[in-house]
Length: 322
Image 1 (cartoon, rainbow, N blue to C red):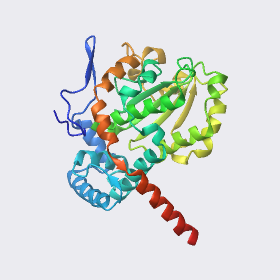
Image 2 (image 1 turned 90 degrees about the vertical axis):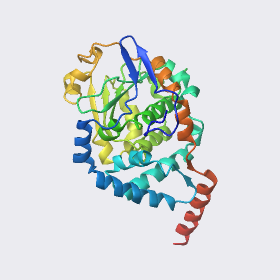
Image 3 (image 1 turned 120 degrees about the horizontal axis):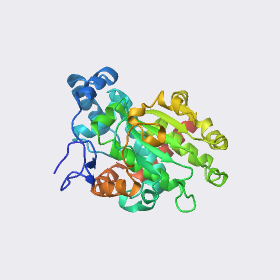
């Protein structure tokens, strides 16, 4: 079975039965609401899309050492949407996306769900099964009482988030509406704070600001103790104004949180009205495992590391001469 937004062939669509509810990725074409938002916010029309796809394809053909699925229009649209269908901006995003993978090859080499069971079984990362009031995907990270830093490293947490975000990028509706991230820091300890380093902070910020091909609409920090200020101090120097403006601190003030996230979209534990069992990490892992073949396909594209290294050295020589 071939799904347009996916790079691999699957025997069946990935899904997990949870009682009366089916957990799955939404791989269908845009809803009417999605089409309206795409037209209004992303300039997406049939004519604009067609022209942008062709221009982006030609730009990519000229990029040395970069292997991408040029004939897959849906893959190209995946990078055009976060750049509002400006081909040159999308081209630069694609280059940064794959350069980041080469730079952090220790994270990305053979990155697949089947190799990251530990972080999912820890049950500290989850995606809400429902979208928020604006159609956005919601990623939840509980980096306090749910995080055993002796068993799960921050690198594993990052890998888990990347796997989720790569899956979100397959969904046309998420490509248009984007995603929000909730950091629940309840129970954060000083020992956990010490796990954060400036290099880790820079990697995360670089990924979110420069390299992630997904519209990140907001980051909500809730239930944070005072010692969280030590963590944020590591991230702050790397934040640009746009991302800094999308970070909202709520503490334990759920009324403040509800001004951004409607209670109708939140579980009971956050003062919401969604009376449904939380989808546990093991269940997300079961779903993602069905997509291992897709992650293999994702990993098969990118820069040839040795060519990128050679090009960077040549550019460095040119800059020194200037």
